[in-house]
Amino acid sequence: MKALVVTPKNSNELKFVSDLLKKLGVGSSTVTQEELEDIGMSKLMRQVDKTKKASRTEIMKKLTA
Image (cartoon, rainbow, N blue to C red; front, side, top):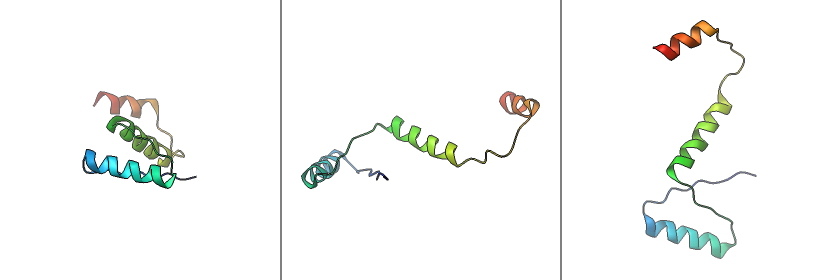
């Protein structure tokens, strides 16, 4: 199943949308900005090309740059 992320403009809009979803019987939960960023990072990590390999030297150059 897919999920929908809605970002309300303010606390009144958040309450309105939350109440509406509750009346419709749709489950919902709130996430912090940090949790939302973690979700985005996870999504990007799943999309990365895993077929390319990097040598230890290349990795160390990037880390020390």
